[in-house]
Structure formats: structure tokens, C-alpha cells
Image 1 (cartoon, one colour):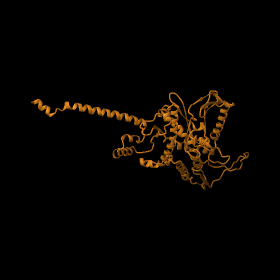
Image 2 (cartoon, one colour):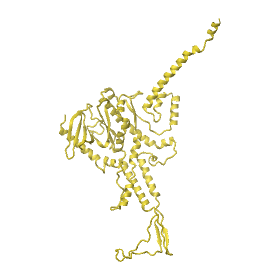
Image 3 (cartoon, helix red, strand yellow):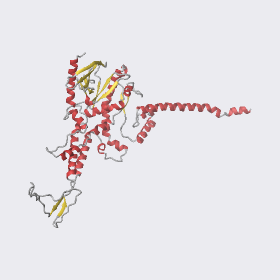
Image 4 (cartoon, one colour):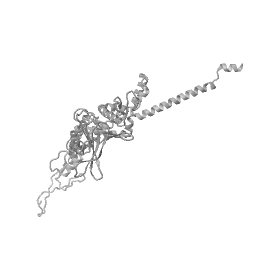
Length: 463
């Protein structure tokens, strides 16, 4: 058993690494989280800019980044966990339902996509093992090799206690340690370390990519987001200062300050107050009035649209997701527009699917289900979220059943929007329907001799 000193020393190292990555506003996960919240670096302004310019700069922030990650998260939903050649979900699926992961799975997906890595913690529990996706910004893990399946140590930054102390959980291959740090105090171990009995550090990692640096999908887009904000800032300046036509006047006698005691004595005074709701009037017969052309903002708008389209292209999204400029499209045309996005979602399904299978196997081990813990053939099933015409899909599936002799039940799971619960209910309904049909046929056969008298029997009765 490690000593309290070694435990706190290790925890302090992990806390330092975690804060270096998430606590810096200008780089890493800290900067990504700040941009996702809408706290962007303001567009460039000269030093000493007026408050009016600063206000416009703050208004120019148009935060597209959360929509990028949300678009992918909405297409990633696990619907089942099946063993090979089985039509029913494998045993560990009940742990999924017990931990309400239908909703909580998005925590792991969103964290991995936005910040590059997220973790799901698995521990023994009653009546089912505890499977909890942890907030990506609050979790840190250390690996001997980046390709290892399980970390050596893990740290979870919890909340605060009633007295304001910061709480932590530290994980290794054998124990879970509770730690606390009060204000102005050193880190200390709280309570007795709990043995989890899993033999591995109980954190399953979700990553947006398996090779290279895990930065997430948001970090590379920050430069483009800044470019869009600059375009909006320029547009707002043009609207604020140049969209109102500037007027000019000639042939006027310009008045001056006639107060000898005024420091501005003799200085010219503007004869009119220019405003959109004011009219210039003079009694001078030689006066002439005119106006300059207003600023054309179409170039600013095109620059803004070009920036958004570039952002969509780099993020592998259809531009209509951001701009909403596609109307009255057929389902086939919409599917074609989203083809790149669906291929990217398919890649994430493969990567995250392995992580969920790793999680469920560890949950089976926590439940002492050795067979399921060693089952590497079971796979998660993903909900079909691709845009398709229901009529076209049903027609294609019907032809697949009738022309290719594919069993009808095998086509059910390919119907857009159908879940495993729907398929299970349909199977029960089909069994019930078959039973009623067979019962009706049996009753009809039994009633047939009484309703129809054979001709030979009638002749014998006459004789």
C-alpha cells in the first residue's frame, strides 16, 4: 500500500500537468473551452480605441464553434451491444441502461470531439457497476505509451466540499484514493483507499483520433473563427459609420464663436447637426446641398460568407448546416450534401465504438461476469441518423426482402430512426400475431365439418 506522502506527491504531479493543459487561457484545452463559451479574442483595434469601437468588437463575436461539435454529437448515439450472430443485446447492455447512458453518452462524445480526449470511469456498484462519463476538462490520465489501452494513473477533479476544500479522486491499478485541499492548505488523503479489484486503472479513453496529437476538432478552427469575427467587425463599423449618407453644403457663411471670454472665441461653429431624422435649412440663396454615396457593404457580406464556408469545408460539414441557404431540397440531394459529414461520423463511430466496447467489458468484469469481460466479438450498434427519404428506404428494403430473399426481420434494423427497443417490440408483436393467426386457422378447420355436410353422408341418410 502506498504511503500518504507518495499518494499526495503523485496527485500533485497530475494536478500540475492537468492545470498546465486546461488552466491556460491562451493555449491548449483552456483556450478551446474559452472559445466554446464565446469568450473570444477581440478583433484588432488600435491602442486607445474609443469605447464605441470596443463595443462593436464585442458584438462582432459570432460563435460558430459549438455548432460544429454539436452537429457531430447529434449523429453519434449508441443503440445496442450485440454478440456475434445474435439478435438480442449482450448481457452487459443492462449496465448501460442502469447507468442511464442513453443520455450521458454525449458527455464522452462531446468531450472527445471538442477537447481531443475524454474518459469514462467504471467501478463496482450495487445493483449494477457504476459507469460514469467524466467531464473532459476535469479529468487527466497518464500513460506509459500513448497506444496503451489503460492508463497508469488517473485524476478526477471533483467539486468542493461544504467547507470550500477542493476534492480530487486518484486512480491506479488497485485503488481509488480520495484527496482534499483546503484554501491555503496542502493536499491530503481523506479516508481509507478503496480497492476496486479490476486490475487496471478504471478509465476508458475516448479520442477523436488514434494517431498524433489529440487536439479535437475545435482547436484547428479557432483561426478561422477569428477571421469570421474580423469580417463581422468590419461590417459593423461600416454599418455604424458609413451606411448613413454624409451630406455636404456650399455657399454658406460659417458662424464663429462670438463670446470673447470663451477659449474657442473666433473658432468656426458647425451650422447643422447631421442626423438621419434632421433636415438642413438655410435662407442663403447661394447655398447648395448634396450627399456622398453610402458605403457598399456587399463586399463585407461576401467576405463573411466566404469565411463561414471555409470553416464548414475544414470541419467537413455541409455549408447549409451553418448558413441555412438550401431550401426545398429532396432527401437524396440533402443526403448528397451531407455525404462528407456522414463519412466523418462513420469514422467516429468506429473509434468511439472500440472505447464503448472496452468500457462494457470492464463493467462486466466489475460485475464478476468473466465470460462477458473476455468477449471481444460483441460490438456496439449505432443509431442510423443519416438523412434519407422514408419512402425510398422502405421501397429499397421491401425489394431487398422480396427480390433477394433477405429475411424481413433483418431489414427492420435498417429502417431510418428505428431503435433496438422498437425491433424488440416488433418481434413480440410478430410472435403474438403469428399465434393468433394459427389459432384462427385451427378454429376454422375444426368448424368446417359442421358447416359443410359431405354428399355421401346425405345419401346414406336418405336410404
